[in-house]
Amino acid sequence: MPTITADALKRMLRLPADVVTGTPRVEKDPHGGDVAVVPARPYAGDMGRCARCGRRGRPYDRLGMRRWRHLDVGCVKLLLEYAPRRVDCEEHGVTVEMVPWAGRKSAYTRDFERQVAWLSVHAPRSAASSLMRVDRKSVGPVRRRVADGLRAGQGPGLFDGPRSIGVDETSYKKGHTYMSVVVDHERGRVVRMRDGHGEKAFDLFFQALTPAQRESIAVVTGDGARWIDERVFRWRPTAERILDGFYIASWASDALDKARTAAWREAGKAGAAEKGARDPIKGARRALLKNGADLTAGQRARLECVANTNESLWRAYKLKERLRMILRQSPGEAAPLPRQWAADAFLSGIPGFVPLGEKIARRRFDILRTIRSGLSNARLEAVNNRIKTTIRMGYGYRNLDNLIALVMLKCGRLNLKLPGRQ
Ligand SMILES: [Zn+2]
Image 1: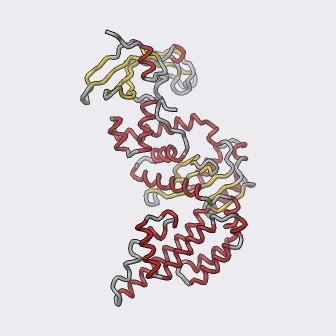
Image 2: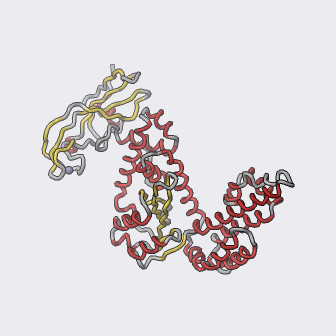
Image 3: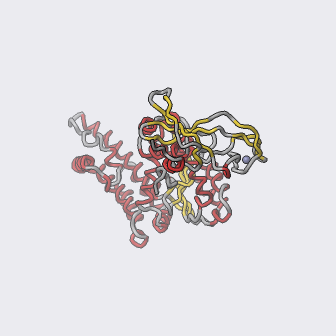
């Protein structure tokens, strides 16, 4: 009977180590079905290294057999088996030796973890858990280890050459916790995310940079918060401080929401005489606040209804869209527009837009600076929306580190690939 060679098995399993015998055993799985067990061991050169620093340590003793879950063969679970030594590292004392197929303190191989992480980023956690046959609760920690590993692999290069960065603080869990995000605008990715208020998180971010990396930052965008000005002045005084395009656009969205509430109230008063006066406004909130270009057919119909029945709310909507379009113009074309917009908003008499007209007039130079910087374009908005959606997706997570790992894997361009793929 032909047997599979140890070398063929090693290649099939993509094992960065030796397979001890060419014959895996098949055992009964306590959870049902069979498991294949493959005895393995690190190459001689990889043996006896400290799991924390990778340096060779003095042999200390040998532990009992351990097993690591690897990618399935067919429908059968596959386990690698090895009795690791403990080594005495000069720096870290007695530690379990490093094994080349798995991270420290993980019962899964790196390939297995990577597949779980990939799945959990592209499909619901429950799908990752069922397909990979891992406990739902293990998915988060696995994803975290993979994200950390990928980030560590990028090393200092993660922050090489950004010219403009954006900083944002979002509340999470109904304002009980704050998350701070730093985005690299040039490459459209999250470079740092952590819990805590923006001020402290931003300080830690700057502290982690080398002087050269710090100097490469020419532009910092964000909302109008004073702490951003202060931190930028402290760490990178010559960087230009620019208002975020979304932040400016959000002023108009807020004003529109006020106009909508006012229209609703107004229609309620009229409703006593005229039944159904509120109907066009009902359920139009999403359509009104959404970008004009992204509307669905249903939302378009809702807006048309508003246009035909509520003139003031319709004008408010058009003002909001116009401000958004101004942010997309070339600097030359945009120059007179904020001022004109401000005058029209002020004269409209629409609740919310009168004060906004004043504000835009006051801040028109800030707005033009944002436009000149080229940091108000659709691509940036898409990245920003993606981060927000991911954070919303992660609302169910109790553990913030798991949420951060999810955002980093989805929006950090960490190059998460399925094992064995180019
Ligand atoms: Zn060590």
